[in-house]
Length: 390
Ligand SMILES: NC(=O)c1ccc[n+]([C@@H]2O[C@H](COP(=O)([O-])OP(=O)(O)OC[C@H]3O[C@@H](n4cnc5c(N)ncnc54)[C@H](OP(=O)(O)O)[C@@H]3O)[C@@H](O)[C@H]2O)c1
Image (cartoon, rainbow, N blue to C red; front, top):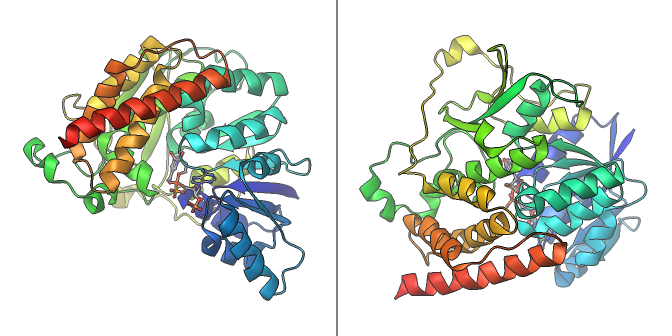
């Protein structure tokens, strides 16, 4: 029986994780669930999984959840509030696996707490590696934490990589990208894209922020950075190929010309189940892949003019230090503004470019430097955003 902590339990990754856990209750026990402020969203999973602990970052939401649970007679579920409690639960001595499913840079501290306590961390929160990749990987090595990627592309690569030692013969990796909902939309109409259109991904059902990131291809940009740190591969050997069907989830290239790919229907429950059970396999609820029904798979090179975010990622990786944290923070500010109706769709990459131009990246030698760079980038992005509005 493995005891699992799910951070971001009310989100898209969290719900898919709970769905998989619910199909495999003979092997997994939910030790704790954590979210930001969705007390309502945690109630049903509490009824179903009876975790020992729940954590909400927002104290008022935690109060509400505590009252609701007591009214229903769940006196044995302990309710905690705040960021410190989130980090404590991520490092709980009884936890075997921690699912890092919080969205954005807010996921860094609790995920790092799990890493520092040497847990097996199922990493969905790519922002950890984007903002603090070197520090994060150092901490994982020092603490002996086991990182298993959940992001479908990285999980695919993880599945087809040769063992962990040395990776003989690997010459590069190819991340596949669907191209999102605007791959073929006339460029001149992108300014009229609405938030509802941007979050309607053609293949994947995901949270709002990552869906917008997929539409701008910032998601792939962040994934290039994530892959660099996770697999210790130089940026020049990480390619991106557009694959609109999202059946091939990514590929590893070998010196002899072999290319190993992992395939499956586009449903996050597959990589989540693969990560939970690694190195074993458990049912995920995902329908088997019917290649005859899919019939045709397409691949094409990315259009960098349409998707400037990709170049921004390679630029940030080249600059190194805090540059990727700056890129990520600027993106979070711009995506929020777009979702709230305060910025047009092409404005997202303009705000990021403006922030990268103004910011002065330095070495990312401590978590504090990363926090400061993140805060400064948010301030600069707000400045660029305000100028956009004029
Ligand atoms: N969705 C996917 O298919 C997918 C695929 C690959 C990778 N990922 C990555 O997985 C992560 C989660 O994505 P998602 O799509 O599942 O996001 P989502 O649906 O928006 O869910 C986000 C989760 O994070 C929680 N949260 C937000 N801010 C928080 C904070 N400050 N402290 C604690 N919890 C907080 C939310 O709680 P509330 O509900 O209370 O706000 C919610 O449970 C992202 O890093 C994303 O890039 C997602």
